[in-house]
Amino acid sequence: MPKRGFDPRGVIPACLMPFKADLSIDEGAYRKHLADIAAVDGISGITINGHAAEVHALTIDEQHRALVVTKDALGDRVPIIVGVYTSSSLEAARIAADAEREGADALLVFPPEVMAMGGHLRPEMIREHLRLVTDACDLPIILFQYPAASNLGYPLATLLDLCREFPQIRAIKDWCGDGNLHERQIRELKALDRPVNTLTTHSAWLLGSLAMGCDGLLSGAGSTIAPLQVALFRAVQAGDLRQARAINDRIYPTVRAFYNAPLLDMHNRMKQAQVLLGRMDAAHVRPPLVRLPEAEIAEIRRLMIEAGLLETMAEPA
Image 1 (tube, rainbow, N blue to C red):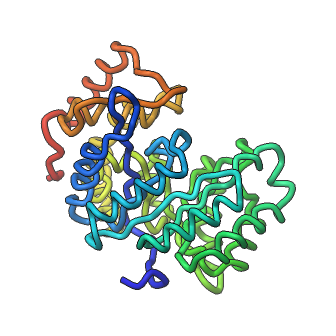
Image 2: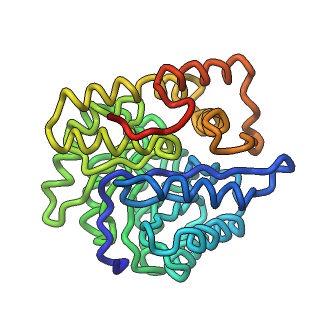
């Protein structure tokens, strides 16, 4: 598939990053994890170097190595979306160029975290960031939309202007957290002269979000429940509310398992679920994340049983 033609839509899981006990990357476990996700019928791509992969704790060299290993493990079986996570626009451009050189299909561009100190008041900052990224490569871009309260979210007018100004933006990964704004963004992005897709990452209310008209989802929970996400997306696309609600009833216990407070442990919990499901041998996380309390791990086990997922990730009926 030509890179410029990649259309980000459908179900795109964001993978985890397994570590060894010494906190080095466990490449063998990573390859297995990628293969597990890629084997799910109906996914549209896999995102690496995102929040789910603890990208905040990965060095630039490790992010590069993750892409090399991913391409070696998956080849062209499934499109690969690479996270661009850095507060340095110059470094972002280097990551983007490296991603294109190594054969990635698209980028997931995070807002520079320095913008939390008021970048929403300086939209020229994100324009310069995106200018450097788009000058460095021709890959399609998925723009990460954060909640407004984080000060990393783009005001709607800014978001629409960015999509008009940078044709490489093909989709947003929407985490605005506001149902009213979420629906308005979906509608106004579709109404642009060059429509831009919305990939929801509102995994805690996925059915409602998809029903608003999203073109797909990009979610760390897909690392663990991709078959259910595919089934839910297909049911919503088919307008089959009864089936969608039945699948959502299976997903709901995983919402409680992954997304209870504190939210920062969501991918920590997904790793523990992977161990419980027999897909990973260990759930090591890099500091400042720490191992979950045993009582919480027991609760994740209970919720995986409630969702009917503890033994295998069987395709939903």
